[in-house]
Amino acid sequence: MPRGFFITFEGLDGSGKTTQLRLLHKWMAEQSHTVTTLRQPGGTKLGEGIRELIVSSKGEAAVGPIDSFTELALMFADRAQSIAEIIRPALGRGEIVLCDRYTDSSEAYQGGGRGLGSETILGLHRLLCGNLQPDLTVLLLPDFNASLARARRRDGDESRFEQEHNDFFQRVWDAYKVIAAREPGRVVLIEGNASIEEVHATILEEVTTRLFS
Image 1 (tube, rainbow, N blue to C red):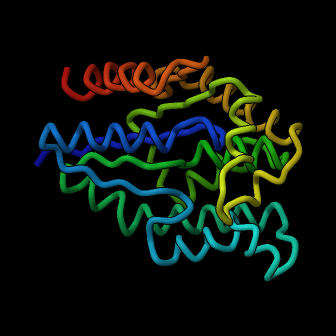
Image 2: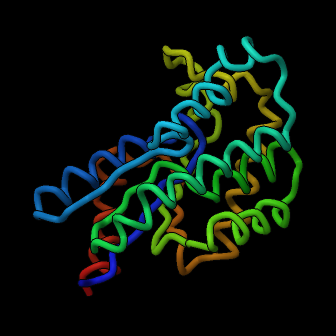
């Protein structure tokens, strides 16, 4: 049985990453590929509970302020569970796995935004995730201010991170750029304000080159 292929999508909220993941999923399904999609945090019963706690503004309102290291530990608890329950089994069946956020998000948001540092995150990744790395990461970094504006305009309860100040998101942005520069073989960085269709075409080109060549 062929080994599966693991693709992650990264970027600030409001960058369009979830839209692009859905478009890629649709295209792959049309090509008769077996695809598993999930989000982090979330994707499992445990993960959705963690998501409600640390992504929703209601979670912190219910339990009080969440320490940065506690936030990081919960993110990795979610990640370890989704790897064991969903990602590794799907890859073992030869499926394509599309994941909305992965360890790069922790390196950017907790390592950069919260100031916990990359080495802390990468050490936890090695320990708790078996160092499972994506085959391809799509990193969307359109205009910084436009991304923040879109994220803050969205309705819904998942607004805890959107309440952070711009300097927090600038640190997240900078951390993402460091990741892209460090791992150009894995990370496809898409910058600027191209249309949804243009970004999708770029992603398809990268995926077909890596997956089918």
